[in-house]
Length: 66
Ligand SMILES: [Zn+2]
Image (cartoon, rainbow, N blue to C red; front, side, top):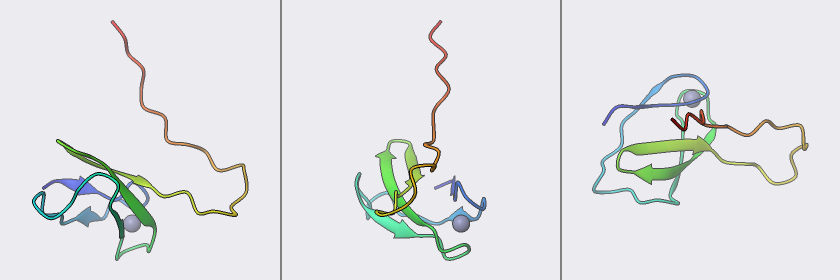
């Protein structure tokens, strides 16, 4: 499973059989909280910490429609 932490690029070792969308985990390298946002392929995204400033920039996927 080739997933890397979006924050520090640390390789995350996930077992596809053990995770499901909505699960959260913590990067053991930088400590960021990550949420499983997809399992096929596996995708992770930083969890928004409640009470955080609104300046937090959301991760936006490239929109390349044709
Ligand atoms: Zn990390």
